[in-house]
Length: 205
Image (cartoon, rainbow, N blue to C red; front, top):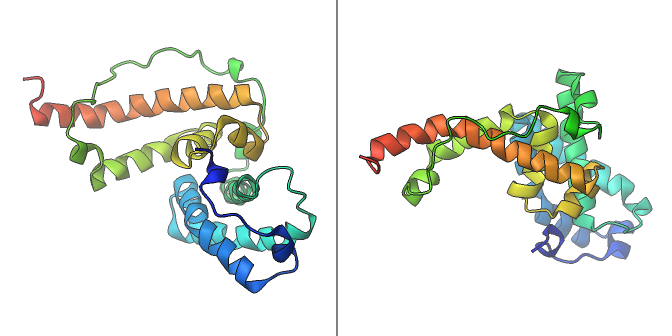
């Protein structure tokens, strides 16, 4: 299911004339995902709140000129991601250059990470524990920004490759390449944590 299919439909006409009921529906439908995106990108509740507020300010300011060429949800994701990246750029000006389309083939070769651990046999409660989620969130925040943005939209928010490319202004090829790199890096970063869990579980003697 594409991300655009997960949200209710909205009347653009009502939104453009600032119908309060329709605007409230929009905020209710997207507040959670926008805040979550801010948290995954920035790791700070106040920054995520800033992303949430600035995103909806930008959305309502820009609605009169929104032509509907992309889905409303993809458009909102693009605005939210841009707001999160603006905060990152204020912290680290070099982030802007790192996120340009560029040529991903110029990055390090796509090779299989070392010391991977197979955690497929761990009990589900181990994989979904609060501690495991915190470890995953920390690992996501350690990804380079250009990999993190793709991973969040594709694997956390469930956007399609096409929607992710549109939201980030990338080619679909770049989205696929960056997603693969992100998954490989995360698997390597998480191997140490899950390796300890595997040992503790005694699954392999």
